[in-house]
Image 1 (tube, rainbow, N blue to C red):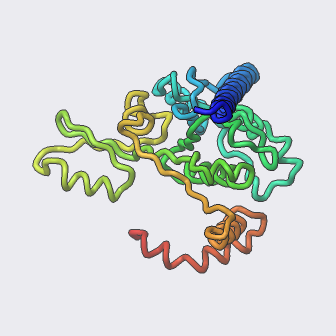
Image 2: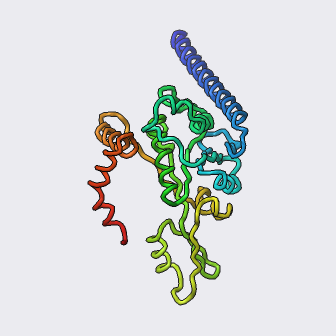
Image 3: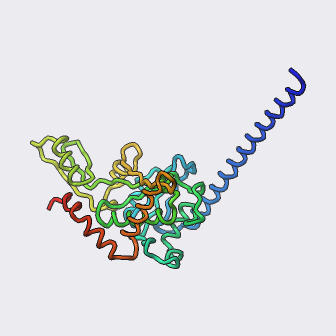
Length: 288
């Protein structure tokens, strides 16, 4: 092997070693920044009914549950895996960011606490790498109020942190509405249709079936909440998808922008027109 060739190989190996060291130091720096952000957020949120953080910091494992009210928050905190699952209770319905002024948005303490718990800044200052959790899971009651709160939260993330939604990090929990028991067998149903289907296919029609309807997450025992809604092995999650503003998804994204503005914006006449135009579609699904 010639001396010149040996020098080239040595230089190449040195370059690879320096690049590897640089990347390792960068990973170490980012990890330290996230640990500092986690400690800072935890200190600032030492308030009753606020963030119950998890102990792990690996975003491949961690998830934050957003729940409505202290009652549901208490059940969720007991049902969670303390290592990987954090819980942040919210006080009822948050601000509708699609119709709020910039001043109201910046002054809203509930949304400020939410951004602080996530470890990010909203709007133009948002950075996906700063996000402290791998999944953000909206967990609300299986009723109209719960659906409204979920819609408000999705609107917030859509307007203030769209990159989070585009990255597939936002989810909706699917808590059951019914619990059915016959003997030692217990099954859960998300809605009326699934309840009837389960009764017809999974139980003995000759014996009595005990059916209970959950009033809300706060009324659900922590063991059942864990089994049905929080345990990754047995729960059901819906991922919130959002098309990107690129060549492929541009048209779908514009349609989404228009729909959010229509349903959540300031102009009530747009919502009225939308309801009127789609009323027949809804009525076809209702059993009146």
